[in-house]
Image (cartoon, rainbow, N blue to C red; front, side, top):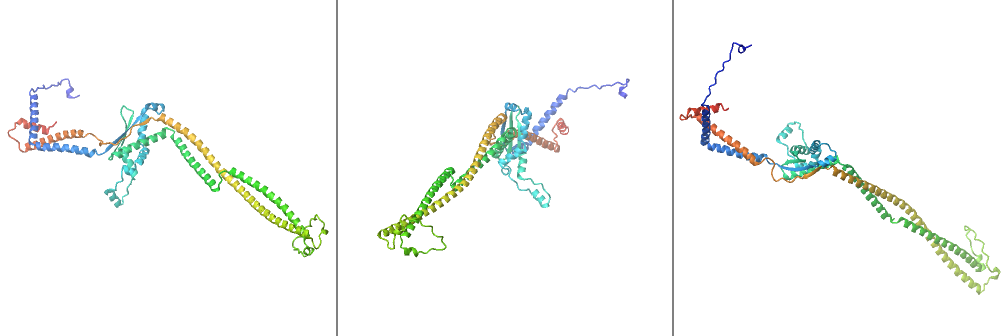
Amino acid sequence: MTSLERQDYRVILRPQVEDHHAPEKEADQSGSLELFVLRALRHYWLIAAAVFFSGVISAVALHALLDTKYEATASLLIDNGKQSDSNLGSDSVFVNSQIELLNSELVLRSAIQSVRDDKLYPKRPDSEFSELLAYLGVPQKRMNNEDRAYKLAAQALKVQLEPRTSMIRVSFRHGDPRIAASFVNALTESYLSKYRALYTQAAAADFLRGEMDQLQRRVATAAGVLGAFMTANRTYAVDEQKKLLLTRQSDLAKSLATVRTELAQKQEELRVVEDQINQLKPNAARASQARDPAKPAPEAAVPLPYSKNLFGDDPPLLLVKLYQEATQQFLTLKMTIAGLRAAESAHTAELDNVAKDLVNLAGLEAETNRLKRQLTSAEQELAEITSRAGEKRIAAAMTENNLSAIKIAQPASIPFETAGRSVWLFLAVGGFLSAVTAVGVACLLQLISTYRNPPTYIAANFLRTVRFYLFFPG
């Protein structure tokens, strides 16, 4: 228990005496302060004006220094109706997912490749500090220009949801307004492509489209090979050519058989005529005939229709005429037989050629049929893939239409003004701060002048007020 808590002690409160002259003193001091400020501005107005205008000029220069980039903006619309039909989840989750997808590295790098990294952020030469480190042998982590462009683009990109709307605002700042607009448009296109690949069946349609292009090239190749083969071998109509060759072969065979039959007949006639001539020759001439022992003996002569005894050693005039006619007939048969043998050789050679042509045509027919089967198979596969690709395209288009919850409401256009705050705001803030600084500088100079040369004509209450505000500003 303290002494104040004892019962025999009493707390005595000192009565407060109200100072009725306090408001007057405060007004007097306030008036003295205003008088002091006005006097300081009157004495140092030139310095205060210089400080004020310097601040305003500095504000304008700061605005020009900080506001040197252009901002291109695009707006993406979220279709809430299609979003709910697609069962994409709640609004906040879906929107946040799209914002993250817009800021993803894959989408950004795809847009950078579309614009080109050397055009978006040109490669800068190494700084003197880097050259010094390289000269000293200090290892440095060098970054290629594409990675540097990705890092700078990620810093300059801003994606946000407009409050109380269904619009996603994509903005990008760059020193070149055309590059800024082209990058934002490339970014939105890259984002939509990735969005369709994630939420639609475009991959299957693209795969079938690739297969269809490959089959089209295959059909064109097969058709070209078949056409070149048919042109080189002149197999335009194999069936007709085969039919003509078979007809030709049949005609030649018939003609050859006829020639051979006629040749056999003429040879037999020649033998009979030759024997007849031998019978009509004089006996001495027949006896003096020599025969080659290497040759086979001649066949027995066919009996003549007349008696051998009719002919004597001295044939009459009739026998001479018969001999002449037989000789003439003999020569005619010789020429006829020579012609028939030539015809037989020609027909035989022609038949051999036709047989070779048939064999060659059979090989060409097999190769032509193989090439035609390849072409037909490729055409059938192409027709099937084309049908399936059309169905997938239609299904993908319908699915994309149902899932197209994101649309470009406003593409980025080339900005004409730099991004940043208004110059009037800089002027207002700069003017206010410049005015306060100018008044402060004038008052400080006035205080310094007053303390160096204290005036004797100023009332004591004013000096006390100045000292009070100088040492006790609160």
